[in-house]
Length: 152
Image (cartoon, rainbow, N blue to C red; front, side):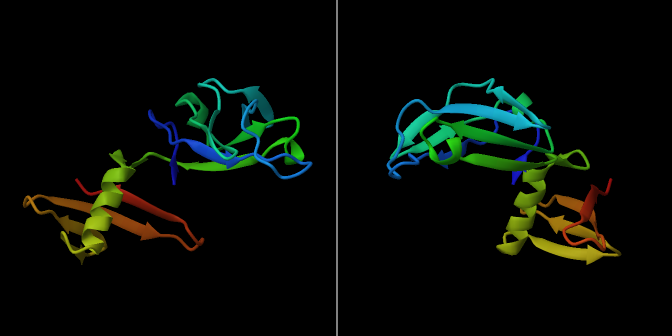
């Protein structure tokens, strides 16, 4: 999952190899940010070679503020000019709560570190410190469609 408009976006990685012989390209790769039909030089730091042709680029917060975008790792000698990594983002919050908090509670429940009850369609998390967090979770008819809202 890649959070939209994250203040500390995750890095994007790609392997860049020569079209002629498949050997690793270890210098000269340029990253481009692609969205909504535009291709622009990246706003963040340059792409960094890690090892054996593996390159890393970390988008800026502004570059991650789209429902979808791509990072192209370009080199003139690379297969097809270089790999393109498509990224689909998700909203960073569920009803104003950080997704990471909601998912941490789900993981805690799955690992038995907290208990969970469903009461009239509301999922209630009983946390170790005695506090509770409640969410109403509704699943739509479209596969993957779901919403969650915090219960005040």
